[in-house]
Every structure is written in structure tokens, then in C-alpha cells.
Image (tube, rainbow, N blue to C red; front, side, top):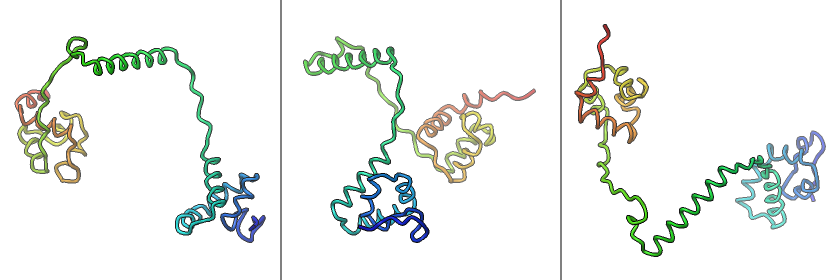
Length: 189
């Protein structure tokens, strides 16, 4: 079995190959950490390309577990959270039983049926600029009205970024009623 060098021949405590895991498993974690930093990338490539013997592979997996098993922080018990969790589970269990029994949900629960609006339209640079022009404001004022940064409005108008769904929905609202958005702006006296 290859041994771990103790000096300058191969670096400080770095094993020469996978068989050196046996040595590591018997103790010296510091050397394993050093080996992990120096040799692990090479070993990972070799492990995937050449099928290593089972004992080397097992040793590798064991050491990986030892190093990755960090102690988890101990959580303090929260009685209110525990009670809330139990209540949620009980309610969900009751709901599942009602579904299985075929009970009309309207008779047992508040059921609301809604119709959702269509998805917001797509906005390219020209449409974003046209929307801003409809209310006749600068990029900075437009950004303030929408609650975004001026840089974001500039990025939309220059084509560097595409407005997200929430922003497209807001742009749809501006296009739907530009007078309302214009009314939000007060002239400085």
C-alpha cells in the first residue's frame, strides 16, 4: 500500500493514490483535508474514468460522508409552532377525508370561483418606450411610478433586459388607463 509522505517529496501529507484512504481512515484528518484541497479534483476524475477497486471506492465514500456530516444546529422547541403544525395537519386530513367521501366542498368550506385575466402581453423595447410616452414622462419618473429603478427602465428600453411577468402586468395597466397614471403626477410649485 502506498504511504503518505511526511515532507517535501509529494507535498505535505498528500497521498499518492486512492489506496491511501486506509491510512486516512485510521486517523489523520488534517492530512485528509490537505489531500482534499490538493488531490481531490484529480481523484474525482480518475474515480469516474477508471473503475476503482471496491475497497478504494468505499473508502472514498466513507471519508466524504465523515467530512460532510457537520453537526446541525439544535433548534429550540417552539410550542406555538408545534401546535400550529398539528392544527394544519388535522385540517388537511379532514379535507382529504371529505374529498374521499365525496362531500360537496361548498357545503363544508368556503369556495370561491374566480376568473383570472389573460397572461400579460409581451413587451419589447419599442412597446416599453411607447408605454412611457403615453403618459409623457421621463425614464426616472416612469421608474418611480412603477416602483422600479431608472436603470431597469433603461435596460428595458435598450433591450438589455426583458420585463418580467409582474412588470408586464403593470405595463398593461398603464396602457389600459394612461390618464389615471398621468393623474398620479403633480407639478412642483
